Amino acid sequence: MAFMRYRGLPQGELTAEEFWAWLGQFDADHDGRISREELQRALQSLNLWFASWKAREGLRAADADRDGAVGGAEVGQLFSFAQRQLGIKITQLAPTD
Image 1 (cartoon, one colour):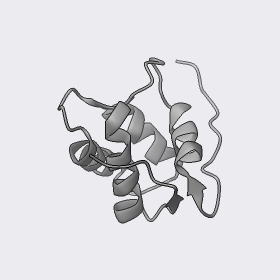
Image 2 (cartoon, helix red, strand yellow):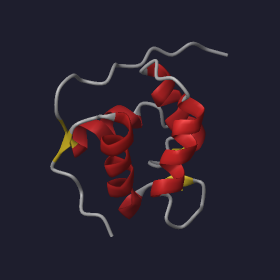
Image 3 (tube, helix red, strand yellow):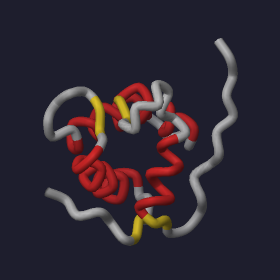
Image 4 (cartoon, one colour):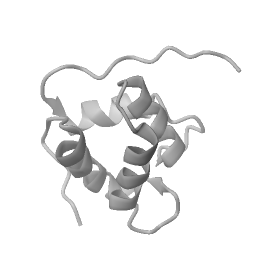
């Protein structure tokens, strides 16, 4: 298994595009969507406690079609979850459906 180095989450307030770009580096299969495992890796890179649980809850909150990944119209819900539960400040949120 190769070790990858990820960019850290920028400090301060982020735009939705910056947050999605940061998450995109954890998109292992390059499908433009974030799975629970990919979200877990992203949260682990921030040294958050209970990253697995938080990733599961984040996916549960955002994955409207229950296909196991967040993408497209669902990203707004993931951004909202990141703000509420992770304390990440995101400006210019995408509209939520």
